[in-house]
Length: 457
Ligand code: NAD
Image (cartoon, rainbow, N blue to C red):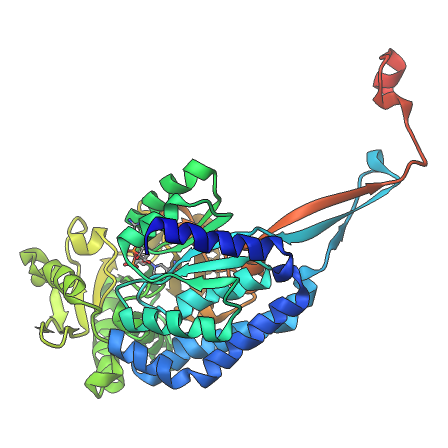
C-alpha cells in the first residue's frame, strides 16, 4: 500500500477517535469481548498459522499464545471499570480548599509493530491494552511469520471495529512508510537495530515510543541441595530454553551461569531432561527461516565454539531443525556470547563461586530477564539489589510473562515502557491531573506587592 493510501487510512482512524466512540466504556468492553470470541472461534486457524510459520505444536501455541491471551482479555474485562476510573489524590495545604484527581485519557491513534516469534500473542497483547485505554490502532505484524500475519489481517476486521482497528501487512518498506506518518504512540516489539530506526522516525513528530527489545537473559543455577529441587529446576531450565519457540524467545534463557564443580551434574541432568521432554521431533518448533538458520549455524562454525559443544550440534537445513545444543565455556568474546542467540543453543559459563555471577552480569548490557535457581535468601537479595534487568525471577523462567499483575518490559538495552494488565492500560493512556478549586478562600501572600511579612508566611 502506498503512503498516500496509508495517509487516508490513518485519517479514517483519527476521525473515529475524534468522534469519541472509542472512549466509551461500552465500546471498549464490546471490543474486548469480540477479541475473546475471535480467540475461541478461530483457535484452530491460529494453531494452523503457527504450525505453518514456526512448526509450533498446538499445545505450545495454547500455552504461550491463545491461553495467555484469553487470560489477558478476561483480566482486562474484569478490571476495565477500575482502570478507567478517576483516582482521587491528596492536595497539599497550599492549594486548599480544592480536590484533585488523576483522570486517564486515551492517547489517540497508536501504531503497533510486532515480531515473528509469538506473532499472535505479541500482536494481540498490546491491542488489548490499546483498546482498553480507548485508542484507535494500526497493527503492523511481522512479514517473517506470513501465515500469522495473514490470519490477523483477515480476522481482526471480522471481529473488531474496522473503523478503529486496522492491520497493515508488509515488511521493512511498509514499516518505513508507516513511520513517516504522525502517531500518538508507537509500540515496537523487535530488535535493537530496528528500534533505532523507530526512535529516529518518532523524533520527527515527538511521538512517544515503547520499545520491547531483546538481549541475553541469563539463568544462574546455584548448587541446589535436594534431588527434587534439582529436578524441578532443570525441568524449568529446559522448558525456559527450548520450550518457547525453540529458544527463539526474548525472555527465553540465553545462557547458564553455574559453579564449576556443579557443572557436570547440571549437564547430565540437562541431557536427561531433553531426552525425556523431546521424544518426538514435533514437540519442538523449527527455526523460522533460512536466514536465521544460517545465522545460528554460523555461531557454531567458530572452531573455538564448535570445540565447546558437549551435547547436540546437529543441524538439518531441509527442515530448518537445529538440535538442542549445549556448549561449555565458549570464548566470552565469540558471537555466541556477545550476540542474542535466539535459538536452541545453550552455552554454560562456569564460575569459581556462584557469587561471581554478580560481577559477570554487571559487566554486560542489562537483559530483559535474569533467572536464578536458588534457595539462598541472602543470594537472592544480593541479586535483586546488585544487578539490573527488566525483571528477575527466582526458581522459574518465562512464566512471568503470564502474570498480569506484574509489569513486563525492559531496561537499558532491553527496551523501555512496561505493559501487561493495568500497565498496558497505563502505557496507552495519559494520566491527566485534574485540579478543582473553589472561589471561597484566597491568600493575598501569593501576589505582589511583595514585603517581608509575605516571605515569612
Ligand atoms: P525486527 O526488529 O526485525 O522486526 C520487528 C518489526 O519491525 C517487524 O514488524 C518488522 O517488519 C518491522 N521492521 C523491520 N525493519 C523495519 C524498518 N526499517 N522500519 C520499520 N519497521 C521495520 O525484529 P524481529 O526479528 O521480528 O524480532 C526479533 C527481536 O525481537 C529479538 O531481538 C527479540 O529479542 C525481540 N523481541 C522482544 C520481545 C519483547 O517483548 N521484549 C518479544 C519478542 C521479540
